Every structure is written in structure tokens, then in C-alpha cells.
Amino acid sequence: AQKITQTQPGMFVQEKEAVTLDCTYDTSDPSYGLFWYKQPSSGEMIFLIYQGSYDQQNATEGRYSLNFQKARKSANLVISASQLGDSAMYFCAMREVSGGSNYKLTFGKGTLLTVNP
Amino acid sequence: DGGITQSPKYLFRKEGQNVTLSCEQNLNHDAMYWYRQDPGQGLRLIYYSHIVNDFQKGDIAEGYSVSREKKESFPLTVTSAQKNPTAFYLCASSINANDDGYTFGSGTRLTVV
Image (cartoon, rainbow over all chains, first blue to last red; front, side):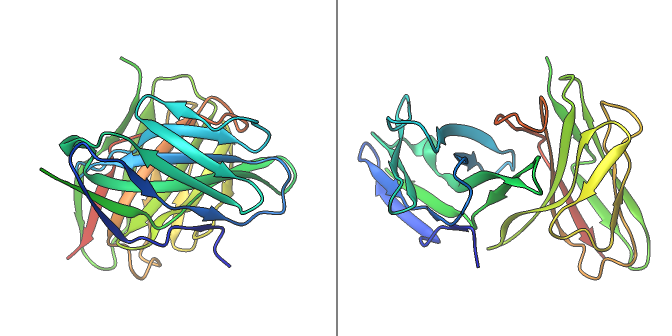
């Protein structure tokens, strides 16, 4: 079973509008972390935002916010006031303990976001 | 500036040849990782190393080998046993195994010709 599911292969949004990218996860580990990364066409992975499983409040970083619904195991990324430069691939990832002490970061398949002018 | 350097950016390999991808970091990070990215597949973990002279297999280690003789270097060898090596390869590092912040390199695109 997939640990990270991103159900939207592609999304379109008009410039200056908000967009939500979906992410659901599966883990039995009570302590885990959730991440969103942006990958422009150049290939590098850019860290956007992090949410810990015990964090009481949703994480925010500038125009990025994470809508964390623990009971539903979802961690959707919200981008407000979209800009043309936001066009990229977006990956949701989860960090959980593997084998007792070894941590692994597992990625979803990504969502390609296109911002239209 | 500190960061991770992957070289070369583009690499072409003939079938049956081994090829080594370089990953160097000057962040003084203990942990380093290799991921493979295929279209529609996201990133999959090949190997990781949490400390010098030690490394562990990830989810898709078959056909690959690594070494970690120096803290700053984590080269990945794609062997002839890897049946479908054409992919984008990303190297990452973190302060230690428990650190949440991964720093990624800019990747190497390997093509088998």
C-alpha cells in the first residue's frame, strides 16, 4: 500500500488565486513528520513547509499553509495568491521511523501545478 | 556557500557499463541519501548513510552500490545489473538521521544509449 497518496496528477490555477494540493498518508507510527517540496523544471527540490504529528496548529510559511487533519490522515498544501513562478511539481513526503531508529523520507508521486496568467 | 554538488548534470551510459554519480556536500552533515525519480513515480530511496563507513539499502537498491569513506562524499554506482537505469537521480543530506531538514542537490540525469 502506498504510504503517501497524491490524487491530483495535474492542477491548474489562475494567477492570484488560491489552490489546494491534496495529500493523504498512511502510517501506524504515532510520531511522524509531513513535508511539502517544490520541484521546478530545473530539477532541484525546494523545501516548503513541515508539520509534525504532535503539532497542535497548522503550519504556515508565507503564502504556504498546511491543512493538517490528523483523523483523516490528510496534509493538504494551500498556496495563496498564486504566482507564475509557482508552476512546478509539488511533492508531499512523510518521515517515519523505520527499523527502530532509522528515519526514512517517503515521497508521493507528485502534482504538477500550472499557474495561468 | 554550503550545499550539495552533484556531477555531472547529464550522463550517458552504454548498456553493460557501470557508471558512478558523484555527490559532495560541505554542510558537515552526517546523513546522506540517494533517490531515483521516474516520471509519475515520485522519488524512491536507493541507499542511505547515516554515518561515515556505514550505509543501508533503501527500497530499490538492486543494481546499485554506494560507498561512504568520507563524510562529505556519497558516490552512487549504477551497475550493469540495473536493468532500467535511465532516470533522474537526486542526492540529499541532513544534519543527522533524526533531522527533518533535507538539503537536495540539483540532480543527475542518466540516459542509457
